[in-house]
Length: 258
Ligand code: PEP
Image 1 (cartoon, rainbow, N blue to C red):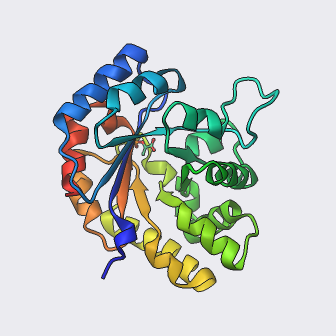
Image 2: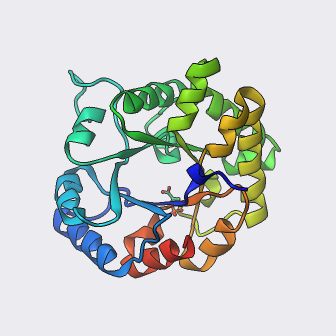
């Protein structure tokens, strides 16, 4: 039986889209349309400038708020960055870490992913740590090696109970880079085998804590393919980019989670 800790999580990554007014409009439309089941978590990640206004718009709803990115320090001379306590201050309970766009376009490394994840945990925020292979890596047959390297990088050398506590606080998101924003979704069976690999890896290293870790799938998820992906035994939710910018479509994805 699946652990109750693995309640489905549907997260919408709005990326660098929408003004403050546009974000609030989208949040309100989503809150009006989506029927969030009692055992499902739903989170949206708007642009930083809209977080405060969206937090207000979502007050009293079942939809939570996430940052898309953060620094690992609490404050300081880091022009352009935002710190975990600042995300918390505007109402975030979650934050994406290591999204492939951050890794590829902004040189975010595994070591940075680890430091950010540690910082988020220190402030009681839930990190959603993204991992995934490029098309070239998949075609060269090194998908699992890449997942292993990124996961171990996020863990940053923690072992034993420290590692288990870390894992217990983290949500993982498997996002094959070739499926993000491309309209190419991984086959449900490919998603399942990557998720099962990650869970087995964690189980081998750290034991049964693996059975409670939520692993989301992300990459061109739409209302039409959400249910099939969610039906896979190791897929515990979805990280949705483009399709989360349409309230009605995202509401259908949420409904697929029950
Ligand atoms: C994402 O940004 O995490 C993502 C999965 O994007 P898309 O759904 O647009 O592929």
